[in-house]
Amino acid sequence: MSHGDAITAPFWAGAREGRLLLQRCARCGAHQFYPRPFCLACDHDTLKWEAAAGTGVVYSRTEVHVKVREDLVPPYTVAVVALDEGPRLTTLIVDGDGDPGAGCEIGDPVEVLWRARAEAPPLPVFKRSA
Amino acid sequence: MTRNVWDKRAVHIAGVAETALGEVRDQTELSMFAAAAREALGEAGLTLRDVDGVFVNYMGEEGSVQVAEYLGITAPRYADSTDLGGAAFEAFVHHAMLAVAEGRCEVALIGYASRQRTRRFRNMAGSPVDADSLAAQFQSPYGLPAPIGHYAMMAARHMHAYGTTPEQLAEVAVAARAWARLNPKAWSRDPLNVEQALASRMISTPLRRSDCCLVTDGGGAIVVTTAERARDAAKPSVRVIGAGESHTHWHLASMPDLTVTAGAVSGGEAFAMAGITAADVDVLQPYDSFTITVLLALEDLGFCGKGEGGPFVSGGRLAPGGALPAMTSGGGLSYNHPGALGALLLVEAVRQLRGEAGERQVPDARIAVAHGVGGFNSTAATVVLAR
Ligand SMILES: [Zn+2]
Image (cartoon, rainbow over all chains, first blue to last red; front, side):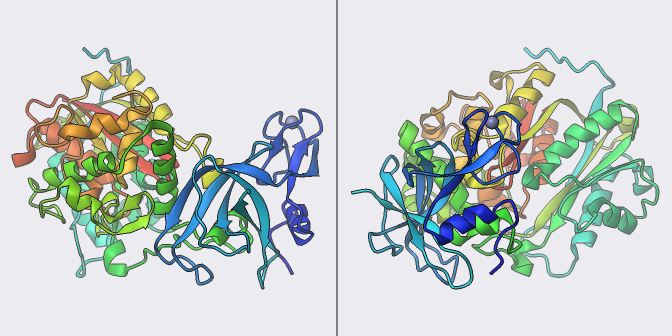
């Protein structure tokens, strides 16, 4: 199934294997997300895909009380997570079973889980670390 | 005192007008804007035949082209449909200031009209995105309501970092409502206190209904021109003494710091050009899309330090009688929010400097600032006006 574009394809290929991949610059060592064809930090095209640890910290979060999508029943919590490697991503906070509805606080340590989707590759979501 | 560092030809706003406001069923966006444009040009002692620069946003594909044709402007020398969201109109004053000063156009018409309320095209998912876009891949699957969820994330981070409280955010909404009660054209004029604001429905924590702007029809028109062309104006013109613009991000996770906006750059540029500091500002028109938008702008424009916005707005500082009159029309929170408030911020700033704001007039206002914000707190443009 088609999803995204040639630049983001490796990320979704990793998602299908349950691996959170980030671009890392072989020259300067910087990680980046979302994927691009050049390094944001040093402007070289020396990027490689590496597996991230899959852990991070909640940078901010909001509990949503209105319906936005058919596949999400309010209330649920959306967070911006700062990965241990540096980049931030927007994500959904889930419980240990991978279900939405769990909350979190800013500063909480979190780890990646994968949420299956019918029409697209698994989606990276996060749960609070034990 | 101000030391204006702008050394080029003086540029003025010589006319302003609101479009029809509220719920507009008997007009189109183009007819609404045409009426406002003719009224603003009338204030300036000019007509549509004098316009040689067209600056519009949200008026459809190639907006300046569509608007100019409708208005019968068949050969403008300067055209600009830059989409900086709600900040576009302050950015247009910036662009028009430079264009007029350089003689690239002499009579710049700026503005916009929207019937977003009547057409009901707002929804919590925001604008649709292409299935293969970056937003569709990395943001929209997570159900963040747009735009409020983005602002909620900023408010939550600000509360975490600086101890800002829901009561302090509510103070912004209460101040806007107090001003709206003095404006006969305001949409929401019922009394509002902090307790009532905090009892309103939660939408995306920590933001409640009372933290959100209105969804109404409306718009405005602004005429920027030279002092010479403004000489026959029916009303006093005001000088544009500073302007600046910037943007930070599109996707929420790419915003470098959720508590620092593009206003830090746009405000710094505008204030430096004008030779002013925040202390020189008599009346402020901040873009109050959400209460947190105002708090962050106050900090980024230098009215208080980073993190001090909450205590700063407490005690009615922004309200009628407060030390920093702000949102004096009632703002997007209580007067009108047509999807892009920036044009109406300029209209109110000019009226305050002319001393024609009626019951809500700020005594002896000499320096006014209109601070537009757009997108997901992504863009900012700041204009400094003086009489
Ligand atoms: Zn690099």
